[in-house]
Amino acid sequence: MAQLATAKEDGAVVKTVSSSGRKPFRLSTLMSIVGTAPMIATAVGVFVICIIYSFVLSFTNSRIFPAFGAENFVGTDQYSRLWSTGRWLISVNNIWFFGLLSIVANMTAGYLLAVFMDQRIKAEDWFRSIFLYPFAMSLVITGLVWRWILDPNYGIQATVRGWGFTEFAFAPLVNSGTAIYGLVVAGIWNGVGVTMAIMLAGLRGVDAEIWKAAKIDGIPTWKTYLYIVLPMMRGAILTAFILQCVGVVRVYDLIVAMTQGGPGISTQMPAVFVIQHITDRSNVGLGMAAATMMLLPVILLLGVQAFAQWRANRVKESA
Amino acid sequence: MTTETLAATAATTSRVEAGPRGAKPKTLTIGRVGVYIFLILAALFFLMPLWVMVVTSLKAMPEIQLRNIFQFPQQITFEPWLKAWDTACTGRDCNGLKPGFLNSVKITLVGTAVSIVIAALNGYALSFWKYKGANVLFGLLVFGAFVPYQVVIYPLIIAFRELGIFGTFPGIIMIHTIFGMPILTLLFRNFFAALPPELFKAARVDGAGFWQIFFQIMVPMAVPITIVAVILQVTGIWNDFLFGTVFAGRENMPMTVQLNNIVNTTTGVREYNVHMAATILTAAVPLAVYFISGKWFVRGIAAGAVKG
Image (cartoon, rainbow over the protein chains, first blue to last red):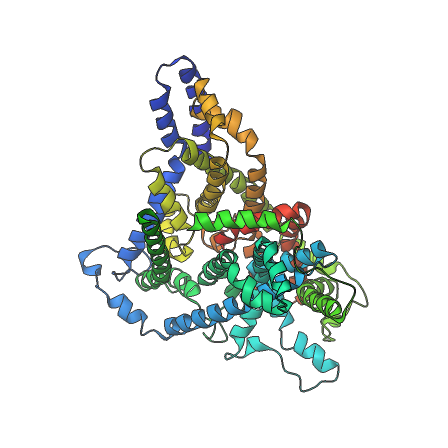
């Protein structure tokens, strides 16, 4: 709010100055810097300094508060401890499993829905609204609803048993071996509509001539979708994929609402691990080592992407 | 990379509205029936949780214990809704969701306004008033869109504590402004950069300065992109859980956090009907935004899904 107020005052000052002043250009550059002060503070303060701060803390034995004394620096101890902590190893396993399964399932289901939506159906807007509405709700709500649906005593399992199928078993959340599948189902319910929307846009971006050509060649529709159209939608697929990846790395709300990391520690995830270690478990050093490990894949991916783009640009220039 | 992806998304989302172009349907064949069966089954899967939420919230506890989660209530009761709103307990407080609702309204209104004004200014400056290093700052911001929150949360807790705004209302507003900034700035930058440059040049020739051009020319033109940004921020801030838990403090606890506390409180009998009523109440605002805004919402999430 304070920033807003100053911004408005500056505006008033400039008005008077620039209407009578002689050197508007330099002043305007200064105004541009003043106007973007919050951005400068965020870009440098949060996305540089805070990251470095976290990184440095990961080499200390800080507990609740940051400790920067010479005796607090323990080298890479936190990292070796991290990689021998069962809770963390399970978290890493889980995020890979959860991530791969959710992304593959989400993209497949999203593309399938998009293809079916593309069949000149009636009431397309209705179907789109239905597939997309879960995304408007938070992952906390998603988690709480699905926990209730999957409740072993009152949920689907109990209901179907009540219909006479007494052997029916479907309560993934209470079993440490299957709880993660429950999370995947809830995550897909929440997010598949977005993938569908992006894929549908991609489908409609494909040149109509392609369809005509495929028809003349007598290629069945499903083959055209799978082998011709799908490879042409690289942009849409990449967008959906990146969105999924970012979502997976950050998955936190869903876990807290649905399983709280349990049963036991079977659905622990890195994001939950970090928050637990900077709050309840007060072990900031270890938590920051874990946070740094979370950042690593992001930096690697962005680095690869930047390198690829740089090389593509060079090829373009030399050509 | 994000810029491109997002631009592509923006372009493609407008194409969604262009209407279907796939293979032309003939008459009602078996294939067509199959298409509809598949879509209707999928729609049932997506609607099922909403149905379960609503019917559970309208049943009394004895009826829930009959264990038929899908069944419409034999006797409709609004008791759970009243209780969820007014008297449900989170730990030792028993005021229901209403304090959380008010907090969420305050946080969402102020947070949306502040973050959008700042992001619009950023986008405007990055399009027309680039100073040395502006591109580097923008690159850092885009990078920030991909940084897991957990990496920067602890340093921010320390910084906010030093500034005396940890667990306060200005604190949580600042947090939403910071984490909304990458995507919103990108949105506004792409919008302003696509405007005809003559517009800006003409204003410059007339002697208008940084703020004059912004308020008198750019703000009125930016209405459509602002609507997208508002949808994005209102749903994003309302649905936030992590920042609310960490930064809002007891007095400003948002509705999502309170909901989670009500449902996950371990004391007493679990009142599933109250839990579901509370869940619907918390979902009501973003759902209303979704159904009122319609196609704008699709554009908003396509642009903002990067935010996670």
